Length: 283
Image 1 (cartoon, one colour):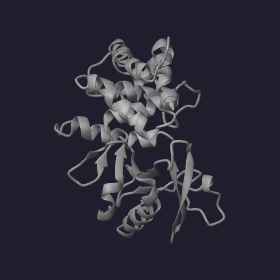
Image 2 (cartoon, rainbow, N blue to C red):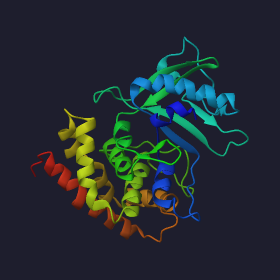
Image 3 (cartoon, rainbow, N blue to C red):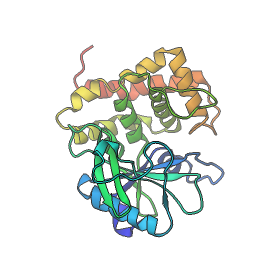
Image 4 (tube, one colour):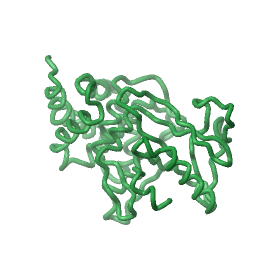
């Protein structure tokens, strides 16, 4: 990565969780094909994105061209149809990095920002709650940053106030899984791995949501737990979430579905309910 932009890269997802929880144990591994990297703040995202892609392609990284949105676009390609920046490292297609960016403001929803490169045009995806995921990240010894578990958990909760019908492209243990169940399952896995730290999550969530959404934080806070409560109340959805956990971050933990549900109930009681109360929710 270009050294001048390391301060602007926040790794999120499985790799960030693995760094936080497993870095002291070389016998534990994270299985993931995509390394999501947020470029932050937004004002440098385009310059950083162009510099990073140019540098990596120059040393042998290759764009991932599978699927409908692999080939680079042209100046005539609409922003929302541009391919995301997904790059394989030299000599392997086992994994790739993907570049994303944070919203310009608390009101911006999902959007695409154009990157104009000599090889063609690409897009930087932006999702509304990435500002939460990138909030107060942990600096690594390599100079870039990793997202905090509690921030990734909160971002996933806010993204799924309800469990939709969209399913993941890949199967988990041979089973089709709803995206909402996969992401809310990630919340449960992060909470399970953070058993001794959950009591501190409420204050961190309160600070983050007020910082990233200063005018709308109360409305977001009072609905932050809606999707998780729906998950905990549904046997089928909870089963799907459990499958994603035991084939993902909790693969090295002996955990039952009932134990994972207890973790969810604890998260509601110790973190979500205090956040709702801070936002002035009246039951």
